[in-house]
Image (cartoon, rainbow, N blue to C red; front, side):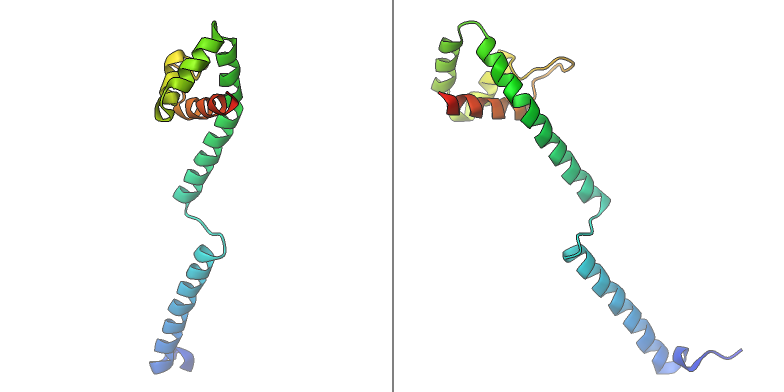
Length: 121
């Protein structure tokens, strides 16, 4: 059985080169501009969005817990007297960023809570 002329000699080489170039161009365009993603990249993006949603929901609850605490005015003064870099730690230690079902406070929620409380003054 004889191969078609397209698969013989120099034409075969050109066909293989064209197939490789076409696949590379497709991948470059797909990943660069087409929105294609690896599973690991998509998982990281989904985890980031989930964390943002959790913080957006829990930060106001943390602020409410802070405002319901005993002697809230003195505690707010102490929070504002704390360095901006350590306010999230202040909120964590106060227990306002620890929610039912978790043993440790959520650091991202504590940071958002401290930011909201610091801006409210």
